[in-house]
Amino acid sequence: MYLRFSNTVIGFLNLLTLLASIPIIGAGLWLARSSTTCEKFLQTPLLIIGFIILVVSLTGFIGACFHVAWALWLYLFVVLLIVLALLGFTIFGFVVASPGGAAAVPGRAYREYHLGKYSAWLKDRVRDPRSWTTIRACILGSKTCASVANWTPYDFLFRDMSPIQSGCCKPPTSCNYAGAVMAEDPDCYRWSSDANLLCYECDSCKAAVLEDVKRDWQKVSVLNIVVLVFLIGIYSIGCCAFQNAKRAETEYEHGPNRMSKVRPRWDFHWWRWLHYKRHRLS
Image (cartoon, rainbow, N blue to C red):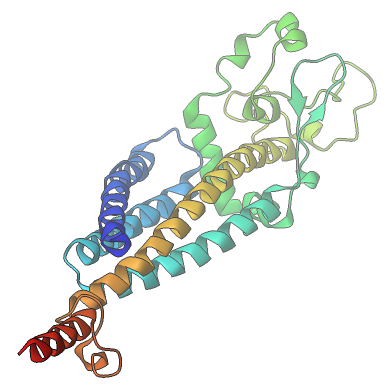
């Protein structure tokens, strides 16, 4: 009864994951068409994950509902690979995204970000000229700094900023352009009042991008843990469904026919006892 139930459960779960893959693929296609989404490196993994879930769900659904043993075997093998890959990706995400963070600015509501605090792997990505050119064009197209351009000095004192606004739309707070001595921060010399330049080449802007990546990556890692637990549960139930599919291919439900001589079925003993009683009565 339990094995029969496991077929129904795994078929239902794979139907849900099959339907869930549709919005995942749709989100990846939407990101590909969006001109204001700066985290374009999320597109390809999102599409790959969506299509893998779609194919694996179809295979598991067919294997569970139609007792196709080879389809269930393939399904369990692919799910095991997904579990291992997802576990490795989650651990990598926590390790890479752990460094970094915002620094408080005295007398200000916003925070600032410093490139040196982030992991080497993330810093290499934004320091690559080709990669940064794409990210910079994306930030320009998003018009993130347009609203900051109209801020008053009062706004800079008491209003909060997003990481991109803090790092890319203004010079570091330590810069003192009215004084005789400039701060030692190199970003002070990279700042320009030109709306197409601003602080887009500053290390603070690159750090702000990494802060956004870090926050998104932490959210994805939490989601990965939930999906990982879900897949492990499906894999456990799938093992039971796989055994059920193998037994369904034999004549008897409780095992292959060749085992009847070693361990006869219960009705063998019943008919033997009944035959003995009839022989005694006659």
